[in-house]
Length: 334
Ligand SMILES: Cc1cc2nc3c(=O)[nH]c(=O)nc-3n(C[C@H](O)[C@H](O)[C@H](O)COP(=O)(O)OP(=O)(O)OC[C@H]3O[C@@H](n4cnc5c(N)ncnc54)[C@H](O)[C@@H]3O)c2cc1C
Image (cartoon, rainbow, N blue to C red):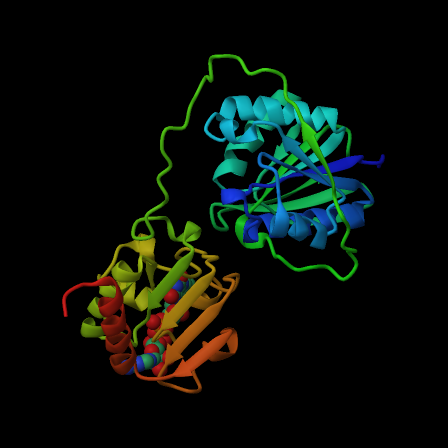
């Protein structure tokens, strides 16, 4: 396999800050560069300053290319794609790395089309093999799972799901002061082709559970009263609501709320398992959650060894207390 050249990581700086996703992407790029033996750099639309620049340095970012006037492109995705493609060409990048968030998921296909590059979205694992870079992806929960190999012949655009990005500072990466350069893109045409006029975040109450950030899930340990209270709690805290199969079987929710082997495979930042025993059929669908917290009255419940944190408690005590606190903060019927 021939040398792959350079990785260019497109880092989003919401409100000028390097957020968890941005840090995770830098960590991912540094790791990818180390095992592929490629050089790497970052590209941004805003100039990083102060603490933000220091964070780039902490992740050992060798260079940061800033697109002059880039903030104007945020709402003009087609032009942003063309300009990002020009930057990638100028920088000699052969692998373009983006987070699979709103901006990255929009930009990646535009970049791939402009550069006639290969595109692999939602890459969870990358491994260097003899025949090339092996990329495994999981999309739509676990409904699509496949592995592809990049031999380096064509340019490649990849996106990484936000849940797969970890902000870890690798011991092998040495902090360095990045070389910052301002890149002046060619003049934009007057016609923006498409302009974003509004961004509507997903509603946790209706979002597909495979995309939910925080899920509170009810098991058979919830009686009808606690179940109703839990639904209200989810509404007040604006988090998503899930159930186990026996709860679905009771007819209390639709099938789309069921989590587990036959239900949805979920990967939230937080999964709160309430009155759930932790059968393998359920745990199989939640094990990739970033953090699992469980509450169960049985200290021997199998859910506990599968949790990051567990509380032995009765839901009939816990849920009304949580609800009282949530009502006090966010309002709602007493
Ligand atoms: C082929 C197959 C596929 C399946 N697929 C799925 C699936 O996709 N999703 C799924 O969820 N299940 C699935 N199941 C069912 C699964 O095997 C379990 O039966 C189910 O997950 C158990 O649900 P549960 O934990 O809510 O109920 P239980 O196992 O009955 O557990 C209830 C828990 O609540 C606790 N509890 C009781 N009262 C309280 C209280 N007052 N306070 C606190 N805790 C309390 C108990 O200690 C207990 O641990 C599948 C089964 C099969 C055979």
